[in-house]
Image (tube, rainbow over all chains, first blue to last red; front, side, top):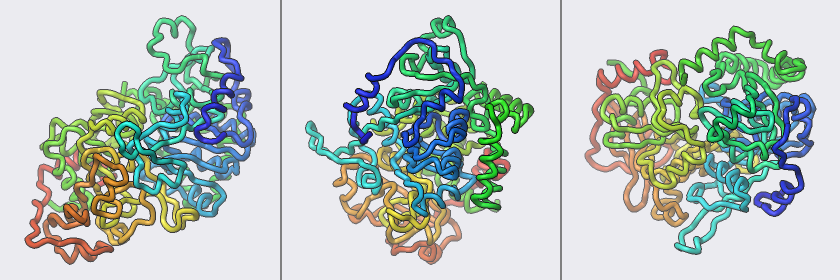
Amino acid sequence: MNPGDFVEARRRLEAKPHSAGEKLTTLEAAAGRVRDGDHVAIGGCLFSRTPLGLLREILRQRRRGLTLSRNLMCYEGEWFMAAGAVERVVTSWFGIGLPWGLSRIMREQVESGRVRFEEWSHLALGLRYRAAAAGVPFLPTLTMLGSDLMAAGQAQTMTCPFTGETLCLVPALFPDVALLNVHRADRFGNCQIDGYPHMDVDIAHAATTVLVTAEEIIGDEEIRRHPDRTVIPGIVVDAVVEVPFGSYPHECYGRYEADFSHFDAYVAEITAKGTEAIHAYLARYVYAPRTHQEYLALFGEEARARQARSARELVG
Amino acid sequence: MNHSAAEVLAVMAARQLRGVTSLFAGVGIPLLAAALAQKTHAPDLTIVVEGGSIGPEVIPGRLPISTNEMRVAHRARMLPGITDIFLLAQRGFLDVGFVGGAQIDRYGNLNSSLLGPHERPKVRLPGSGGANDIISLCRRVMVVTMHERRRFVPQVDFVTSPGFLGGGDARRKAGLLFGRVSRVVTHLAILDFEEDSKAMRVAALHAGVTVADVRDNTGFELLIPEGIGTTEPPTERELTVLRSLDPDRRFL
């Protein structure tokens, strides 16, 4: 779909059910809704609430030709590049985090021309999702003007019809699929998020298909007791899977802190051995574990308990 | 007290925050500078972080790595969404923003996107993140950076974050009505921009630094006015507070 094509985006949405009914399913079935060539938007931000359970399963199903968009992209982007699953990334920043320097895998893939890197400012990307969430073709903003980011994406300028000032217009970004990991959901897909909302709500409303993992499935009565806590309504969601530690070893606000020692080891291996190291990592952490439980077992219960304690200290 | 280049940078950036009430800051030295200012001469400073945190407190020894993790949410007063936090800046609520970049030119334009040709870069860098938004939307922006010749280049390869673009009123003409780059704070000097040309100018040198040192570490011709002053070296109090925030010296 062309950026900003709000008519086509609306027709796609109207053509599918918006059921308030049961959506509880498995990771395999949920990830199975992603097609080769889809634009997949990833919720959370950098190493916060990354839907790693769903991302791993999409790789296991060997999807190809994807576009991935995310506000700040972390090492999941490296996985998709190394696996040959992605053609284009749309983001404002790509790395693992300041202490780990430039992403070697991303550099190899982008500098060789195998993957296209489409850069937007952080706000501009947020407004692209928001325009789509609102069902309009673009939003005006005062950011990005005068920079080379204007030409890098498909931003336009216009003269404001009311004031005569120059505005930047960012086109709506309508992903085919949104992937989110939230704190709690009921089996109908009503979602609660604690702490940072990031861009998850806009991404959910912008996408045609919304796949959610929840740290915990809660009952209908619990949702109805606190309707003010529902940030994404069930009618927007297509699949819900209960996946405790669904972002691990990335963080989930209040539940577990990111395990930076894992990041250290991951980057050290790639620094030492290059691409070969990431293939070994994918074999061990993505392809070998048949379930998310088997994946978590690779980190050990003790580490998870430690990261959970750490989260409570920080924001408990 | 002996001190590192990073400590000079943090102290000098912190001093720029006297009287400032709201600051958009990234992690690393900018956040340390903000926390130092808060604990010394800017008690009313509200720190705003792009991942979605307003008014967090830095936990000594547990400095955040990203702008959107729990370490930046500690004792925060609000956790808005990322888009909304930038819209606060677009509306005009942010006095000052701190930014950095891999390259900076004489008009304060910053590059954190790529080195080499745009279509096929020689080095693909991480990208803007919020830097472009901070420099476009905050009322005053200060570049906080180490002063190195490879960084201070005649022309950036890519304008990720616009300073004064081609100089003069080019920034205004591009539609950037409100923000401006007011200072460049480095470990060698404080720099600002000449009113008309908007070319970078040395405003003050740090103790023990000469004009020649600054020139040697800058890849373009700087404006050097007569009678440049010298900043006070970091005080024992400033260094003590700073080191208490980063006892493992991860950033200092």
